Image (cartoon, rainbow, N blue to C red; front, side, top):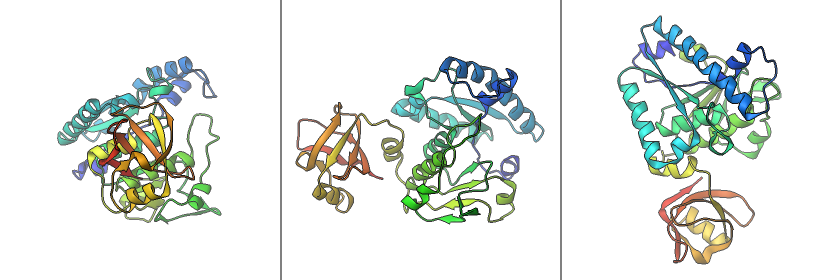
Length: 300
């Protein structure tokens, strides 16, 4: 990372380990199960973690800045834009933002869930050129071999991913595939690897997930990835075709049923008749013919 910074590249670090650092300080071998115990570990570990980053980067003359986020910070549109502006200002000044979840205050309702998702959302927030997730494994494995390139995340690719049995971790490869799903739809490539040095040297290390064609605009990224949908709209086949192939708005007559409670201005998940989510959108009105306008609709 320091090498990239010295090459005048703009780099954001999304870190994990605050809870693990706190666990180490408290001599805990197993990840706590209660929220208040996790928050206490995070409170201890965050300062220790940042002291390490500060010391390592200071040797190269690079300033680092701690940025602690909760999901609410990126869900709210104004705070979302403020976070992006702050990160942009830090990068413009040659500072490396070190982002972590604010585990000392976050509860389940406002948590990202894992750092792979946080990394994906940070990359999407900043419209990054590339997301690199460093792991203890070489990449996505199939029959013991690294899958070098993933053109598209299919069900076969999903079946290759599992969780984690590491005592200090959450997520595993499954969460990394979900992170790849977010950034590739946003038009950003992603690499899973266990070393950054090899990538900088030009080696074909890790697994490269290719992005979908065309980057989403900032507002559409916010609609698609930074919300927890308030409800679900199940639509008929004609509506699905009109949305996906015709670029149309979602009309009331195309909805088979709804789930959850939502109002104008809420984000909803849009499913086909088989129950597969294929889009997200912002409700325009609940008492008119147009439920979701095409300008507020994202095909996933």
